[in-house]
Image (cartoon, rainbow, N blue to C red):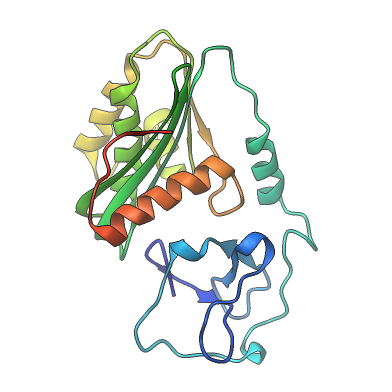
Length: 225
């Protein structure tokens, strides 16, 4: 199946129907002989027409976070319990595309003193990196108080690298500059990396909003929750 534009193996029954594992998520593998098993939300998996159905013997025995605690699982637990300064604007931003490049969308969850807002936006043909950057940009656009502490979470190492670690952007140069300008107005900003598809609750929600935009080819606009 496709997971955010990447081909993966997904656990299914003999008829090819997805089989839910822990917390209703689907076991996935990136390679048949890779023993590392991950779990993804059912809504994030896209069928591939004519894909081959493989028997269990095609894959190596799996180790998961439940049987072998990983750095990724520990980081996800830490992210779910992270505390922020009083009055902080907390953002989880994510991008998705079907193919890379391909139809792309972004999802944002934003929490501030007025409550929670969510955005699901379709942006047309783009790469995953563009969608990730656009998600951060859209969040920055609606934060009203530049003096408030802003904590932006993303599972995009690329975005953090080009925006805050001095990585030289070889592509998307104009967009990177645009996002940097949007973030520059905040006096207390932190970009925080969170592992994707690992159970970080609000990041999973942002991902679902991005995937929804890709699947529906539509945008919801900012919605209050």
